[in-house]
Length: 363
Image (cartoon, rainbow, N blue to C red; front, side):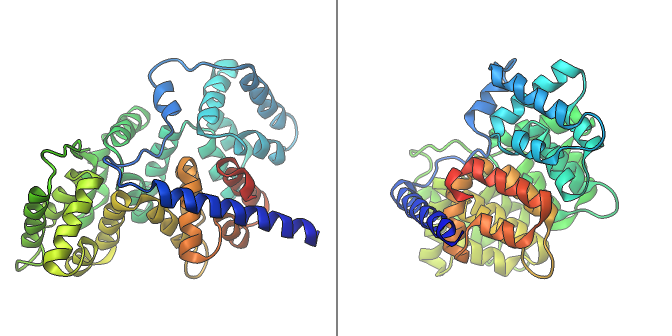
């Protein structure tokens, strides 16, 4: 057993080194905010999905795992937990076609606890899962602001528009109206700005150094340079600027003010509004590190935020290899190390299986 563990650790270390080298050589500031969904999901949403025979086999496996007395959780983990975002989308679509029942409804009936929450999210197409997460964050007494901003802030125009459409279709409510009813003050202003999907298309002839200096000065004038803070003006700048140009603004701000935009937000805002604004800023400037820090934060302090952890692994699965590298850099442990130390039972097995899909050598 010791030899097997040593061999596994060696493989993981080699893989990490390879990914770190790849990250170092390919890290170029994106001209637009990254998509969390793979291209295959975006394409499949444009029309009826194309199946392959294995999908029907997976559907039958799920059916058999939930027939009769009791539920075969291991079979569900191997079928849903071991598939990527696109395959799960096809399974959910096909199950409804075959048995005239939503897969999520079946999972709701057959599972419970943290395992049940996550497997139900896996039974949904990823845009529907995110809409469900928003619903969970705003359902009942109080609002889970952290869960809400992790979904809405720092998103690409394409995916924020998709989220709004899916949410309205599922819950018959405009997402902006929901946010306005659940949040107030700085948090409300930020989320409503993010929901506008206002990020500009990067144009080097327009998004140049001169314009960056101008916007950096406007950012200062709206915040540190005045009595009181014009949060709406600050958010307008960081929401409209595409990542590459936002980095130029950040550089211009540092050159004149001797600290960056994040530090300016720290000084001008407070509480959850500050945390959400910094999250949005950094999801544009350094998305993989920010996602890694978010995963880490779900396990900070006393107890684990299982819902936050589940949603993070689910939503970041497509970009998880690069997130894994950043997670090791900031905490000296892999994401699966964190999952294993913080969770247990079928819930742990499901999370580890999801990580293995994103990075086969990781678990």
